[in-house]
Amino acid sequence: MDPAMSDLGPSSGSGTGPDCCPTGLARPLDRGSAEELARLFKAVSDPARLQLLALIRASDAGEVCACDLTAPLGLSQPTVSHHLKILTEAGLIAREQRGTWAWFSLVPGRLQELAAVFA
Image (cartoon, rainbow, N blue to C red):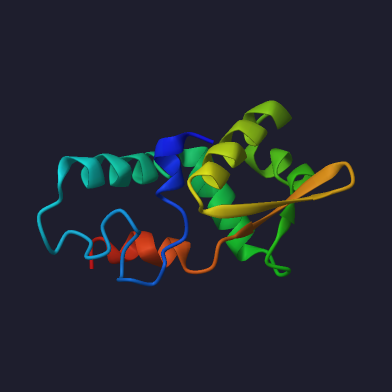
């Protein structure tokens, strides 16, 4: 994992936004916090990644097997795996290996943290 992304893990509950800027944009950001926040938003700025987040969120079980994510996106398995890796490294989804397949679920509250940046 990119060391810079490790600071973007699930919030410790110290505020409304991510750890890098718990007050969102309510106060000026230092350059480091702005760069970390930009990396987090970059992780969700791709249409395929937004589709993946929506598919996982809409799942009745709250989790989706990687094997079920290629057809809805119309992308190859390696491309989907790449996007899943980026979302996982950003702390937006969690990955659990079960035999041959990986299963993905949203990290609770992480999307709300992103939304709170602009609240």
